[in-house]
Image (cartoon, rainbow, N blue to C red):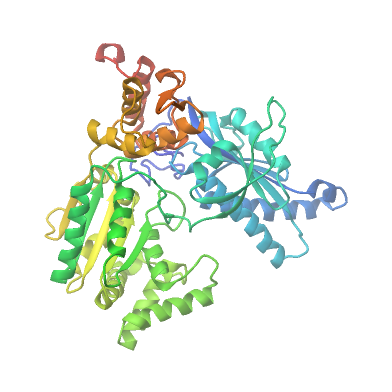
Length: 551
């Protein structure tokens, strides 16, 4: 049974959702919704010709291994397998529930599939499988309540057709993406542009890119590439700097929660703070991890990323090498040998080693993890950054509070970024703790937004009409401002006219950038079903609506 509020799958007889707690009494009436989705197609190369000469049972056996591998890798990145068509698979990211990184996860899943096929061929040379894939992003009609596991299709639109045709022209062993996918993922994925291809149903050749590799490990931010100055956050940056100095001066842990709406500048402020830390005369440890809203084994994902980063464990390290790195990291900061073994055994599950259940001995695991982090901070100042804390499981929240409450005598600063819904879920978060500081980021004022737009365009004064249109679209959100301007310039909607910038076609021609669309869609899908339906009804009336018409 799929939850009508968050899309989580539950046991057939469940009464409440295991993820968000919403009642599951009756399935909602099937409906349809327009969504921007990323569609992944993967196909075996040359398998049909080989099947003509093979025994049907051998063909079935090979396909079963292949299908299981694809389903595992797709679901690992939060995708939904819509259907298997012989030796081809179609998967969807962004439906039934959207996240802001749907396109990135689709490309990462496709890259992982090509690697996994190569690994499978090494283990079983007799299979000799080769695949090619494609990812395309665009608007589709999604059938809510559809059950793809029972063969029910739930995504329809041109985005599906284009993805299928791009897959047919992809190089063997490679993955190609369409223009919207490329635009949404180029900060996190390395690409090589290929020659445009002719696609059935499209008058002009379609631009495509081959995905080469991910720029960072999944769940870890790449370096910020903004060219805009920090505006309107000087007070908050000074506060973070002072809290760090307090942690060092008093040798006492500090817990900071930096909250705000998506795009309001939490990550940017954290990046500026990292620049300040980098300029400190003494070496400071900076480790970060992110809480994920999907996938398996993600309860302590952010903490695992922090431990991996400190130990130097990378994606392609085997269990033996990862274990050696972890042992050396513990040995470097923990003096007593008996304590080292105890800590190492409980850190191992965080980095993918061992199968010890954390929940069975949570208090002991918490104590071991805290001891390790305290030992790191005892050697030099230590900054832990945990992003997207609003996605954290209750167990992860409990550990962060445990760390802030029980760690002592070390210069440790734990900086958490979160959206306001963290406080909706955990109303008492951080409350009553003497070393907790809550920092809330509000939208920029119109004057601050105007300064930001002027800096982005390198233009002190803009035509009144252009300035008003950009201010209205940005709504005080720095990310919105930057993404709107980048998109308008890329599409020649905002163009130079002599010594200034002007909108070509007027205010009504401004579309919504894919990145902003993804943020808003993901936020809408976190709302309870009745509240989301209310917003959808209001949207029919328009940006300005009145209560009587809505009722």
